Amino acid sequence: MKIARLSMSQGPRFAVVDEETGNYHVIAGDPIYSGIEPTGEIVPAGEANLVSPIIPRSKVVGLGGTYRQEGQPEPDVTKAPVTFLKPNTAVVGPNVPISEPSFATDLHHEVELAIVISRLCKDVPEERAHDVIFGYTVANDVTDVGTAKTDPQWARAKGFDTSCPIGPVIVTDLDTSDLTIRLTINGEVVQEGSTAAMAYTIPQIVSYVSSCFTLLPGDIILTGAVAPGIPAGPGAEVEAYVDGIGTLRNPVVAEQ
Image (cartoon, rainbow, N blue to C red; front, side):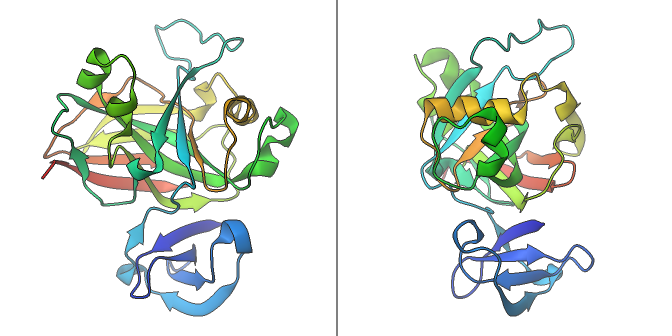
């Protein structure tokens, strides 16, 4: 099932995507809490204005060094991956401009498979990890590499407003074992790989992250990048794609 979130006159509303027609069937409430209850309202595909499919209740947890990369040492899965946080204010949806902050000097982009958490949880064993996953979406982990090199920690470099576009939808039933992941900038493919190269399993990732932090419904886990980040500043058009989910498009602009 594909779940979207639409901007409507009465405020944001969740909807289920009809995969035959592309139309959006509006549902009552938040599906994480209240399940799927159609209202009967249908928004035609050509009239839908998609926003971020979820806003995390508290945080985005990012991971690094999770993929096997050609010419690089094999990730040591006996050790914890690089771990960082983005605030929920970093999250934006499709077509929203990525605003380069005034302090930034070198924005880099990474396409990632993102996990959406379904319930409050802590210390989840691997065998129960799928019980706390609501679904998956596409994320662009945006980093100001210039700030990351000068600041002693990554809060500014990775946590600024608009640094975590997600979307276009959440897919609730997805086989993540071998999905193509692709980043395109101004029409050119600049990053491509497959989740088959992930050194950690999805259950391992959820179990590890939940051992570090209590996770709340709607929290997001970024599972890492298939290749190093690609620079792109104001004027660029960035497209992040994951098989089975779709393409997330965002322009890059200078902060106003």
